[in-house]
Length: 529
Ligand code: TNX
Image 1 (cartoon, helix red, strand yellow):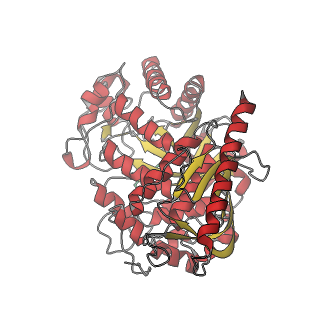
Image 2 (cartoon, rainbow, N blue to C red):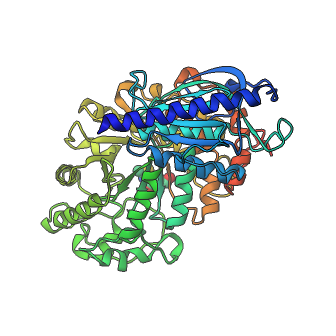
């Protein structure tokens, strides 16, 4: 069976190539392609290795996409590429259609077991005059590869080489793989709620830059944002508040599943976070039995932190948490569940330690790996649990001593809610002002003394939403800094350089404009408009 599939796709490819070769003869004489340089294209994140061959592949109405047809997810990657080409340059490129006489050049997305393709996200991109071939072990790698291809398709066509429009893609070879397996963004939908369409737009943008995790901060003092069928008041009551007194909002379970599958098409993992035992006012307003500090409860629309806690000594609290983790885990195919754990200032230390231990077991019972903010390292965490470093170095070190890996989110460097400078319209500055250059110029492998690449799972850029409530405001804080974080997560240190990056960043303007992204036009960048 597998053999016949292989034979079939091989025959299809050979047939196509022969056809392409024959037809190429016809056009070869007539077209004189200009010289190109693949290495100076505006790819972000910068690929591992680029070898230019200075010719051009002419993308036009005679181009077709083919994929390995019986490898999971490959035809979908071909379809995604075709859709994005249509959106970018309004050209329709067929996918896996039987070869017609008009096809002259192909883009082939090929499943390959080549040993050079070390990780699932590795890919090779071979561009010649006649074909573009993307090799990868998995659909995930192919998906990362087509983002690179999207980035080197020019916005404008060359209309002088032939009597129709042709978009010239520089020829050459690219070998690429990520430096870190985990490259995340976090969105706080609790302080202000962001609806499904907003999150989808963010996912579209993250995917283009090869970010592979979206962490959703689904609960906090100001609001509970995910429907839990066994505890309906969480959204009936806790979903109705937000910072500043607005109406809040929440995802139904269908909404959440919709987001999870939209992310999956983009090979992005959703990491759900329920923040506890602190940051739990909205949950305790919904069910006062959960409350652990005896104060009268009412909905909270301010921005202070650290005043709320669950009662870590009550069985009901763990029965509640079991239900919440079970329902969310059942809808979450990704391997992680984030329990928050930050700033539990009114939880007694011994209660906090007990709480994290117990909740870790619940997370594991539902087949997930636990992630928590760096404070969780005060507990006796398991080596499979992951600490997310945001402020306290000694917590990060103790997590590592317990065998855990770390996600780096140092507030001074990657908090997207930090203002760019004193003139920034939104954001806070308690950790730092983070202009676009300072966001880019640091090395995650050397950021914390005693913590090196083997301890680091990856980096993540959190966007807290105390000061923002619309997509436009979100985009102002996230863009362009998140683009730099994508390069810090993917590209090795040897290939990172601010002066080179800032040129490539300036050249993202046409893409951002086309996507209608209201990015902050930092004066440190020469935006190409
Ligand atoms: C700290 S970072 C927090 C959040 C705030 C953020 C504002 C972290 C784990 N806790 O609750 O929203 O600062 O920048």
